Amino acid sequence: MATKDQCQQDETSTLDEKQDEGGYFNSYNDLSVHQLMLKDRPRTLAYRRFFETHRDIVKDKVVLDVGAGTGILSLFAAVAGARKVYAVEASAVASLCREIVAENGLDGTIQVIHSPVEEVELPTQVDLIVSEWMGFYLLHESMLDSVIAARDKFLRPGGLMVPAHARIYMAPVDMTEHFQDRSDEWSNIYGFDFSPVASAINRNEVVQPLVESLSPDKLRAEPRELLSIDLGTVTVEEVRKFTNSLEFHIPFETKIHGFACWFDVDFRVKMPEAENISDNLTNRPSCKLMNETGDAKCESLSSTGSQQHTSTNNSTKQPEETVSLRTGPNDPPTHWKQTVIFLPQTMAVAAETSLACRVKMSQDVSGNKRQYNITVALTDGADDEDEEGDMMMMERNQMRRRTARFPAIAARPGVV
Image (cartoon, rainbow, N blue to C red; front, top):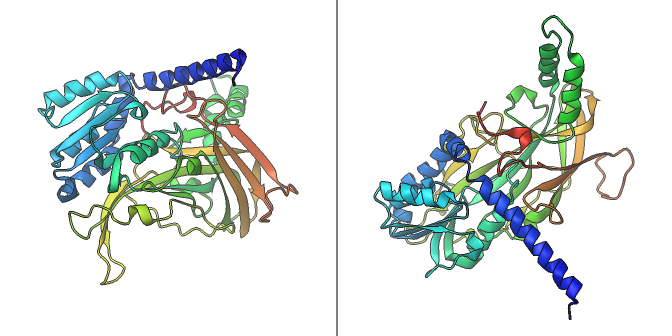
């Protein structure tokens, strides 16, 4: 039986968690956040393209929009023919969403629910769950936890997750130009050398992740796939903490300042018959890590941020239609940009070098679960996770956020 002190501690912990969640949801009351997301064309057009090209699947179906915001995804679903759309939004923007729905004459189809999805009760299961849950490096904000909870509670067997798959990529980067530009900027301030300011900014910058749109020439090796997620089957435990080993081939002499992360998502639907939405979703492995050698089957990055293609492996299989949203350096810029994780010190790397690292991402469950701790360890390629040897360790408490999706180190205004 719990003591009085234990009960008080539990109540305090619960209150702190509610306050943290309240702050997170309140951050979405800022309309500039929604303006930035709506103006992110690769992001928004990928969702619209999915609904426009899958009307036969969406028609007469029940849709749940998790984290609906101003309701754009719910509007896409309704126009595509959904019979009913539940637009669930935890922030006060839900009232604005309700106005927008009514203004567009779709309040007979879309029901806006002002609540965290974990506290919602629906009268029926749903056929399709749509959500734009992705944060910096995919997992920041941990909104995926809510999407998984909604899936387990509301999605009917064989139902569809939109998007259906997600992947994180990583590559080593040379940020020399980034630092040189800053040095040049501060070298002549009204005729005076202010270079110590540049040095101070650099020291503050490298101890936390940098969110920036990188040009492809900053990459120093081919990207590797760090994590692959099947939204139909992934569990919260699988994304709360994971470790993977990667290996990169550096073809030329260069400097390495750290590693860049980005993601892509696929809106993938098996297309046998319209009445069968996605029979294979629940049969696929959920959270696929690459093998310890870092051998990634990393598809080439597209030159377009969102695309649609149809592929067929053989004549006995049904074609698979995919709409993709990609956020890498080779793709059109999005508000997610790319996330750079700096090493403790710059590395000089010789040509034809293999660079091995071990990456661990873990949700900060003891502090703010919306954030992840990331550890990057440069290794000699050995499999033993306890082997230290010449390992360089870097652990950063990730993204001390000022507001929901864009912490102070990477404020959203302006996609560059």
